Image (cartoon, rainbow, N blue to C red):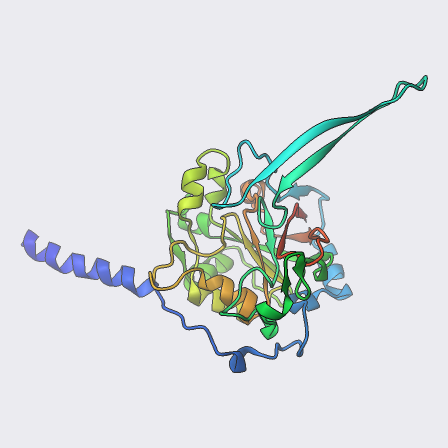
Length: 317
């Protein structure tokens, strides 16, 4: 009897694992271009930033409490994606002889400012073959001094309704397991549990609990992560958000359940749908206080031609 139970259970377990891994084929340029915002558009979902979105977000502010969503940029303790680095060197610049005895200091920042820490992905960050969002071509817009199109300076200031989808809370855990693929049903169940629905122009923030590893177990933080899969990304894109972010390093599940593809969610959101991504958010306070709806405010650094920007977004409720 026991043998019979085991032999039927194992195949079911394998089927459950395989069923979550969805392969994905990038659409041809003729299928994804021009963007719904028009040929030549560089802002994508940033076009949803309108005065009415700001006013709608402002109505969510009731206590006035501000929660910081950016991780501290500390080169000594923060995790880095392989090949990236950041150093901060301070130096004394002046000791002046005047009677008021003024001194001054400044710092030299060496390394990346686009793809470290809590980071905002621009549309030139990742693409499909030679093409990016709206079919701008790598060999036509890339230079050693930045991109002539799709630079992060095009994003501007963003203020909109923020919605945190707390998948970790839905599952009753502080942190989702390594490489857990968040499904469409997970997102829908979490929203239902929180009595919220998504609206066009939202900043959709997904709490996995993975941020608890930041600065404590950087090896594990960067080795894998729980996140949304292909189906969840495509479902979210249909909700027409302004951006999608998470407390993990890539927003999407890693490694992908289909070993033949890598980081397809970046392609789905950035290249196909023109939706910005926000990675390595600090969501512990937001989750602890159960602040699931708030005014979300962010502005990337105006780095001309950059693929992204380190950011320090805030939630006000």
